[in-house]
Amino acid sequence: MLRSLLRRAADARTERTPRAPVDASARGTVDRADIDRFAKLAERWWDPDGPHGPLHRFVPVRMQVIRDALAPLAKKTKGRQVLAGLTVLDIGCGGGLLSEPMTRLGARVTGVDADAAGIAAAIAHAGEMGLEIDYRAGAAEDLAAAGLRFDAVVASEVIEHVADKPAFVAALASLLKPGGVLVLTTINRTAKSRAQAIVAAEYILRWVPRGTHDWNQFPTPAELTGLLEGAGFEVDPALGMVFDPIDGTFSLSADARVNYALVARKR
Picture (tube, one colour):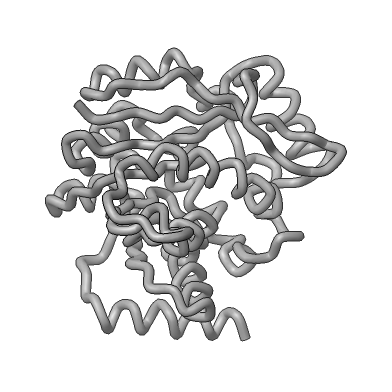
């Protein structure tokens, strides 16, 4: 049933908005192996007990960072609509775990991902929820080449999966309006992150499939800050996000040795 829903959603999307086909394998920032890995799990994006369960538990703290970073940009807010009027691009949106709550906060969200199966899952779920989200299969540089610009860009748990980080950051910069805000979350490259994000999460607890992460691809806050500053951003200090194994939740922390967020503003 879900497979047929995903197929119909993808077909409907294509009929509504024809687009040039995307050859993700030819994209400079796209890692084909990672895209194939996520595509195999696309039907379970919205299963909180499935392979994307850790990302579901990670949504509240990520949304806290996003809301705090983007709300000051909004000019017209009403009640819970703290992002009302903002155009926001969700890069590497997957099944839409962040696109949907940002839409509920009033943002006009565009979600893009190189995994077409994940985009189909996102379209199907947004339809079930009655949410209007502009989902597209493609890469960041596709939108940049089309001349699109946004008030804010979110790239959450993405940069550790791209093949060319400098090119990816350059694309993010070109997608933002002057003064726009970029929110990135990723994993630090430390001994603690190797133990928790790979050994524990993939091999012991089996929260995510083995091979999901490559420790060598994790950027440190200093490395990522340097890339962003070189692309014309002013970057805030890193915000740590730590996991509490007792209640199974994440919270903000001064400890950025595993998960962290960076908020940057385009000059």
